[in-house]
Image (tube, rainbow, N blue to C red; front, top):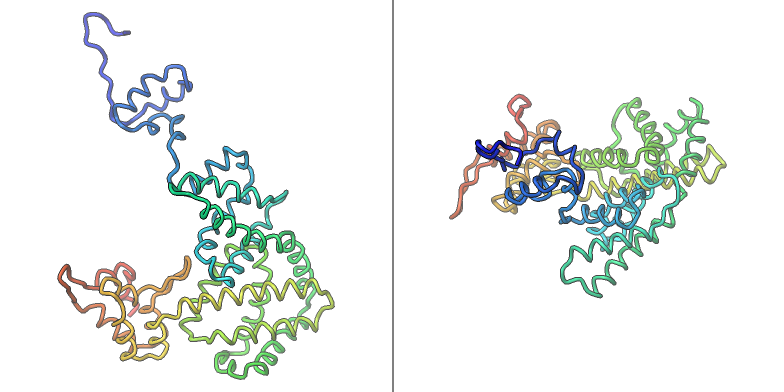
Length: 388
């Protein structure tokens, strides 16, 4: 309308782009027709104006959970984000009581940093509302099943809520009170008691005395760091567990090692709270390590530990053609991964490494396609030639 009568009307460009300066000056209701018309013609309603971006219906559980939490007035309950981050692992391992306990223990440590009241029932309300919105055939059986799941998780979390902060304070006070003589006593006695409990452990602690003392000090520090930075520690422990897969450490040695550490610390303090804090943290670290080693001990890694080319060829023969290369290039546990090929090269298992290289560089085929592991190998390890 603002154009002169003797000239053509102004041309509107519906190319999906916006003038940010003009869009910000418009309110939700005033002067919105032009923007809405542009959005309709471009088929991108909710993408042109900033105010319309929130009109899209959430399609994932995470997005639906955020939406319902805000609608139900729980948007300020930041502890829910920690539960949501761990929820996939909790649901996936609901049938494994040991893994479920581990996930809840770590979750309780992560939630301990949040101040204020934590009402676990609020999460259940938001969770069920989100699932009802996403599952089309939601029925009474779904309601009972998911309610049962959360009741079990809530029971495990309630047993721990409030304890990590007190345990951290008691353990911090104990470790800070140890002088150099006490620390040296710990370094010596841990291995003495461990070798008495598990003589087979001597075959895996052949390092120098300095290295053994470093390991003992690291164990003491990790028990406290588990309270301070649980998320980071789980990642670090998982990475360490994958390295232990390459070392071929038997998982049945972790129990005696934890027992030896607790027995030594008990001789240095009369504080039951500090001792319990140390035992609980070290036990959790041990459980994570055992799980990672168990999950990461593939038949390929076992062949590398034995440095057997014959055993490795038998192992990869079990793999589907499309995954054969990945079996030799990637072992994934959680967010951490290790390369069997690179591990074989670095640890001197050259017979197994040669067998893997020959297998990766062999062309195979079926009726649909060819399979050649060279591209996958260089994508995983661009510097493989330099490393060799």
